[in-house]
Length: 277
Image 1 (cartoon, one colour):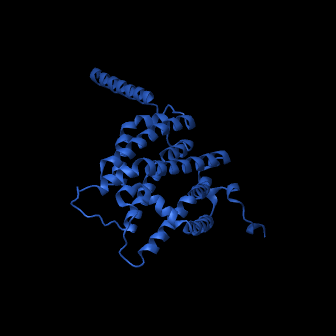
Image 2 (cartoon, one colour):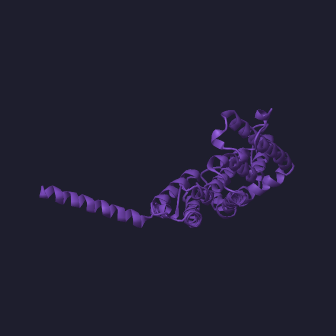
Image 3 (tube, rainbow, N blue to C red):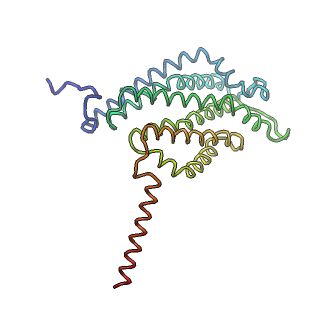
């Protein structure tokens, strides 16, 4: 009878858990996320018109709130996608929490304060990235793209194409802004520190530029508008890493230089010994 008792996940060694219990835990958390996502999407369905005009507002000067559709079912499918997208945005903090709650036992006890700090940081950064894209970049990007051609092209913008572009654009900025949250976790686990990140700052700038070019449209305005905040967020991540996990002597660049000097001295001494022989 005692062998059938189930011990809470936080009170057991995650490494000793059977695979089936891991899968059961994962299924339970996915089920919870799914229930909240469905409920949030149903509620969002009743506000689909407001969401539609909110996403169309950045292009009001170009499209005048008019979008086309090319199939009979296109309007209702587009509204359904809007409801699902809104539901995902609403339940995103809960998704972050469930994902971390599933992973946390494998990396050791982190504490309730760390968990709430991480969830709050990740959610705030995602919302900040979406807000920055919507209020600061989207209007300029749409004016550039929709005004391209100088009258040589006739605009026939369908609702599904426009809204798919907008949602992907906002999601890309939201995900890209998660760099400090990822650094917070990595520093807490001892995977990165401030000295390591400072050492590879130039590499990070190049990576940020490439990422910005890949997830934004093929025009320079939005790429620069994303690359600059990513570089700034990388600097913020260095500060976070320094506070959470101060630079160790192993990854301190000065220590690395000293080690290289000692290696060179050893090689020089070996050469002298060889010459004497």
